[in-house]
Image 1 (cartoon, rainbow, N blue to C red):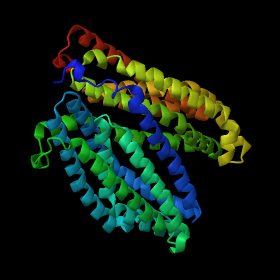
Image 2 (image 1 turned 60 degrees about the vertical axis):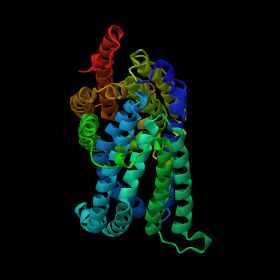
Image 3 (image 1 turned 90 degrees about the vertical axis):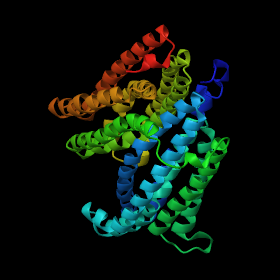
Image 4 (image 1 turned 30 degrees about the vertical axis):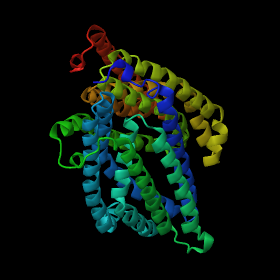
Length: 455
């Protein structure tokens, strides 16, 4: 285990870790919006087809989140503890699992694209577009999964700038190749939806090569062929102890969101439109603030691995304060510009007027989300993934889903009641996560051995 002097606290500072994450997340948000606008020039059905196909792809990626979320924490712990050999084994085991699983998923999606889309009841032209897109992007699924896993483990070593720069390049390539392949610029044929799918796979392939090169440079000192061979069962068990609760939480969240959306849909077209557009705009303050929460997870994992519990305990508090301030400023900007930004999406005055009070509500809700997110990330990093999963699932169903029905429909408060349920959920989980972290802080103040944090 490295001594205190060997822990590079400057490299693990909140600013050093979080600003590249914030830029990368903002870029993904903006590029996703631009991508949708470019596809919309083909037709509305093309946009629907891409959205439908991406639902399938995202569902598969959620499965591999099990591997990558656990691997990221384990790599950060081992890296912070100076156990570079174990970190390398974890990295290559993660890559190997993503390669094998990705190849299987690629073959399935390529072969079964048409029956999958047919089962989703896609109408006429949407069906044809979706099959084309899913077949090409699905065939490159192993590229997508390997790129995501490589980026995750690179960040876990404390290098958040590298993946950010690669993401910038990937998105620029994607937008450029979209222009060429969709619209037929520079003498290329107009490939439409096929061009979008080729552009997606090509840009991710370039990003993957860059990530693998960067990962090799980071892992190269002491790298041996034996790191690639076999499966280290204790390390795999450690990964799964974090990943399994996370995947269960993600699965439960997906179902609960479908139920909540059905509740909002029952409130009528105006309230549904207000809810949808408001959520799109409110992604901006969330993306900025959540970058700080992601940085805190890297900090806590590395300090915990190094046995520096004196540094572990204050991390989420400092990170939450910064993230909440940034998120509040983002929510304030969204509230101030709401009449204009809502007008970009709709000309319906009823939809705009319904949404405006919710923007004011988000001045409190968004910072509270960051507090909860930062503390639960920190708890995951020290082996409390099961506790986080329990309070998250309870919150999803007892407060968010049940509350949305009781306040939104039974009480007749509409989307204001739904967001009231969201606030209750955040308060519920924020208090429980805070009390749990206080308990960990009390333990570490009495004993500086890693074993004291064992559940």
